[in-house]
Image 1 (cartoon, rainbow, N blue to C red):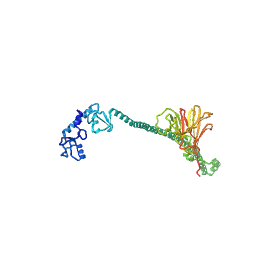
Image 2: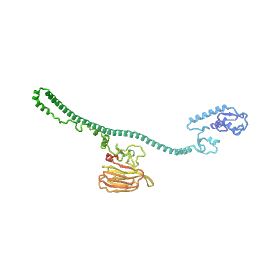
Image 3: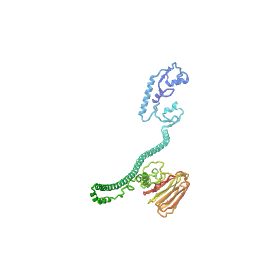
Image 4: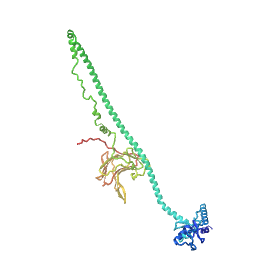
Length: 467
């Protein structure tokens, strides 16, 4: 009944449920739009069914048919929404087939309609399975891309948080180091002001003693002069009677005492202010240090711990760190913060009691096994054995006469030499010869909790005369 009613309510032109139907004088009804299109294409006002000519260019609307079609469509939609299976919106039949040409589910009535004439069909379950597989296959690269992007975002989030942690930590270190410098300058200021005040006190005391002695002598001489002047005003007989005593009293006051200021009576201003800042700077070398190689914590393996001053490294608990491109791909290793691409360079490493370490340089990419790998030249100490090794393929064990504690690494970039020597005995260990290119970074490896230390060099201040 549903299929029959669907056919009765379908426009003969579009084969779909009537929309805004009009009726001709021959009693045939059509969608208004379909009829107007048919007439435009045929250029005659004829009925598409019986070919009878219509006397009117604007046929009247078939309101009864319109209301019936709208009610039918509404009931069909209600049944479709209430049912467990979706139904064909045209024929209210179950969607059993899939049109491969139109790529849409259809019912058995649709299959036989003009709309799907000569089309290819597949059972709905088979089509669904095939299309699920295709969609899943199409979706897989997008899923992998999403997974990759989520990993990248996670690393970005971790990097952003790590930046904040680094900034706060570095700020604390800067403040702490400036605090020490401020303390040094404050102590220097206090020491120099104390020295100035001690000199002031000492020289003021000397001046006070001199002034007191001078005041006593002035008073004594004043008394002698006053007494002598009284004798001079006395009567002749009295004057002569006291003459000898008066002369003796005057002669007791010597006239040759020197009460002039001696040398060095004033504050030695030149000593306190002369080259003051230079002298403080020169003295500062005793409280500051310079290390020729500074370790870059951004290159350190997550298992390594780099000291606050970036000169020591040891193994520790693994940390969650961002996967930044600078971080070395070699496990348990860290690089120097500055690369060398010319000149000669030297740095000393205290390996102490560390029983597992490597020292060398990492740099240029070289071709190995049809792959580009980073060039690495190093000496290795493990299990009591010393070995030299490079990515270019050379590997040799070296005789070890005594335990190494301090190693000097010397790089002559332009000369193509990388040398290692025992700093304590000044004994040569090994020299690599290679034509270096690119930049070489100091390389350190350790799996021990005992630190490897980059040793500071002696700091000196020299003055050159400008000619």
